[in-house]
Image (cartoon, rainbow, N blue to C red; front, side):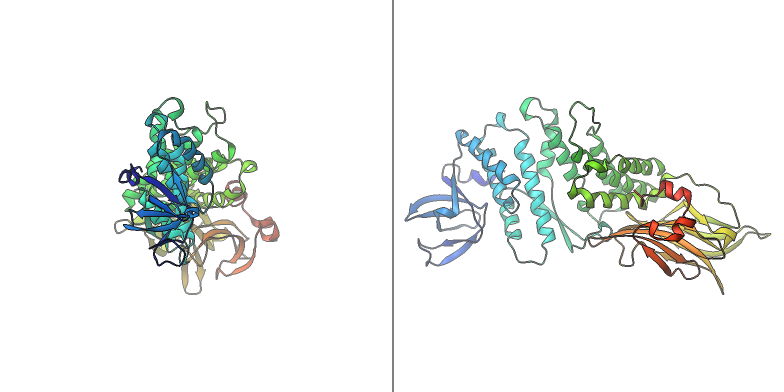
Length: 489
């Protein structure tokens, strides 16, 4: 990061303190402005004249004048390091001042002796760079200083990556901008050091959370590469001790965030393993356990969304944690491989003399066979299929006048995004009702609905935000569903 200072190491330096600063050809506000500077920009000071600084911007390769009040002259000697550190600490948690904060981190690292540098400036740099990327993502399409601030940060070696929106991330952004995480990796590399240079547990936790974000995984990764990336995320998350009685316990809100991230990552791993025909139950159980480990009484208000997202991700793979059980009755499911990566599901009538195939549907998703639920008297069958990470659907076979049909019921009609739909119970066959719960996060909008569907048409007859608002759930909701479902968390 000191590279920006190297070319002007022997000159007086200043950091631009405001946005929209005009770099003028001559002193005076009426002089022609031939460039616009932004907060955090580093300039070389070559003189003063009537309250103006004569400066040279090496990035723009432009000279000119700015008002003294628009910049802060900084020292670069070891004696100046404590003052630079104090300003950096102030700016670290000041929204909108990220590019200026990055400049002060660079100035501090340039001034401080190597032996005195701890993990703190790298932690601060990562926090500000990540906040800068998040802000730029959320303000897409708006004219503001975000892009300029990122350009200024890049002057100090801060790098960002962009990804096309992944339909499975639950966000509406066209492009997602992410900090590449170099400062956070530096924080983790200081784990083996001793004394003040060693990263604190809180600093390590922040670094791990930043490096394991769900929305900063390249959506273009192949299934193999994505599985490897998720495995690396899981190992990184497991490298920190979350037990309250550990030698360096974390505060409860931070531990909750790590449990939530672990839940989502292990849910992703369960799905990944299913795509390679590997055992999934251990990963799914781990995801459920991590979600259960969250202390909701200590959940920070700003983490409510993360809790819901983690619950949806776990809900999508919930059936992977359950042992398949042979279902009694007339209807049975037979699962057979077809083309590479494809699975065909056949509905079988096993009460005929020779078992008869009633219907068939093929998918490239994961068929969770433990989810099979047969309606009394064999009038319908429900099965959970997961085509995407964080998104599972309900296949419902039902009899119509011209034979058996299968319909796919999604968590949300506007998907895919993040979501799951799960069977919650059947009514007596003569009533022909199916109970389901849908929970989804699409474009930042979160919904959870308990519904009563007709099994012949799958049209929703009644719905509510809570199951107690629907008498059908009080009468027919399955006992095992009530015990195991994520939706009643």
